Amino acid sequence: MSDLVERLRGRGWRMTAQRRVVAEVLDGDHVHLTADEVQIRAVRLLPEISRATVYNTLGEMVSLGEVMEVTTGGRAKRYDPNARHPHQHLVCSGCGTIRDVHPTHSPLGDLPDTERFGFTVTAAEITYRGLCPACAGTVRTERGPG
Image (cartoon, rainbow, N blue to C red; front, top):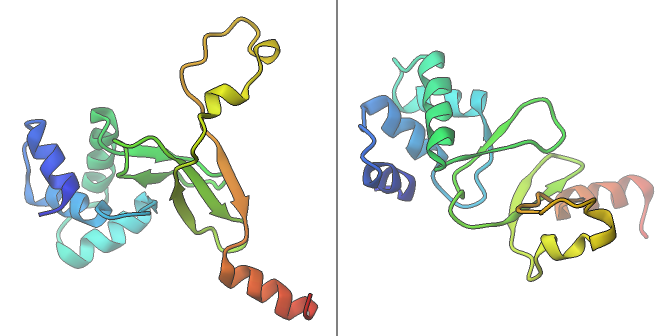
């Protein structure tokens, strides 16, 4: 059974077949699917699942705090089941691949007091951007070695 399914059950969430399929689709490391991607994968497992059910289930999981909505600059929100462990994201500017990263320093400490304007900072979201090895290889191939 998936970690996400277990967490949802532990919260007393009624586990219907549709909810289970959405949770199973989202389970895993470095999972950052759009709602449409979740729908496509869920239909493969449970052909009768509706788009509305997928969207509603994702919204409920976010409300419970078991899944995070991630925005990386594209139009579509992505859904990250790694909501229990603080982390940042590394996004490929070429293909859009997203990886969870766990920097060893706190991003809260990176904001100097003079830039806090009296705010008590409680959270920070940082997105690292670059090229994954495949896209970096494509860029080098198109431009030549170097």
